[in-house]
Length: 126
Figure 1 (tube, helix red, strand yellow):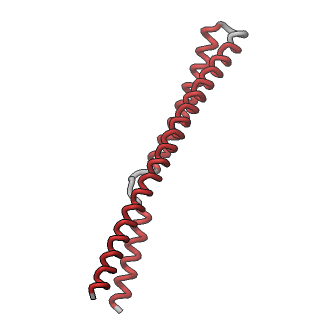
Figure 2 (figure 1 turned 180 degrees about the vertical axis):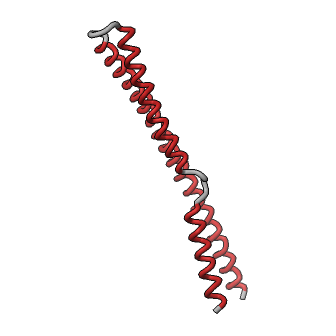
Figure 3 (figure 1 turned 90 degrees about the horizontal axis):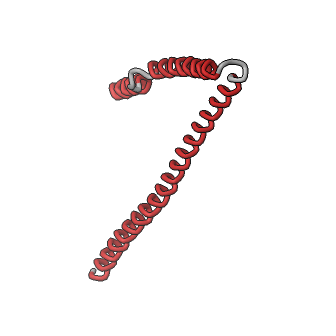
């Protein structure tokens, strides 16, 4: 009986140690993955900033190109007006997309759950 008791205690200790080691390994793995994800997110941010600056340079190039055929102030006004029109169109499209998401309730999933509950209730009554 004593030997069985000792074996059960050893097994319990080993399972506890195994669980702790697995949790420690998971924590280390998540830390490493988080470090990579953070660095990747920073690189995405840098890429976005560089793309923004590239777009700004392209806008300046278009304004300078138009300045060859009209006064510089008119060329920059035309480019600014075009950018405002594009911004308005994109803003309106974004607004419509946000309105389509209202209300932020998963109504289809709720209806499906109600149907499932009704089916379960119906089968329980039989």
